[in-house]
Image (cartoon, rainbow, N blue to C red; front, side, top):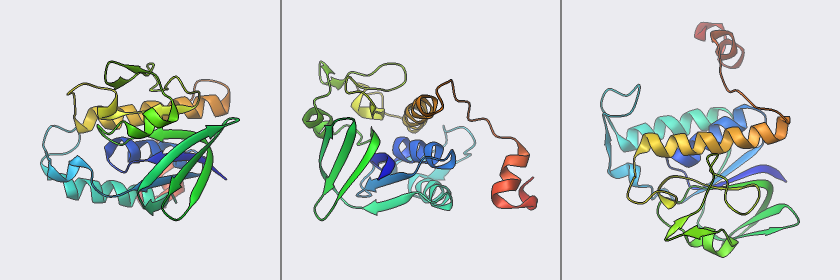
Length: 191
């Protein structure tokens, strides 16, 4: 069983997967590669001068893959929760985890079938992006009316991941790396 299931591989989903996996939680991402970031050109994203959205996404995927995230190119057809365990169903498999992060852009169908509360047409979340279903999180466009932006989405994914990590640690978790952390992961040339 995986610790965290992430449905969606855009900025929110991949940011969440990066933080959870690099901090010791086995994470799986399910994506169909239909994210809106492919249509974007980023020049308002911190640290990015000017870059095509697809190129940015490839860099992010490479980073996530380098930490060992289990990536699946598959459409999720259903998500359920039973006794604190989430099940993600695709056409050919089922996967279980303790935590679920929905990062499906403006598509709120899975949140609705999971039984998440809505406020108007938006999934209702708290500041950490947790829905009314304990340990299920919703990010990006599904929680924001017409406020779609890569930085906001990535921040939502990071907020969800940090809340999960805090729950696992039993105290506030801080994902703040220093050069020695990079050297330990990537070798001394990265220090």
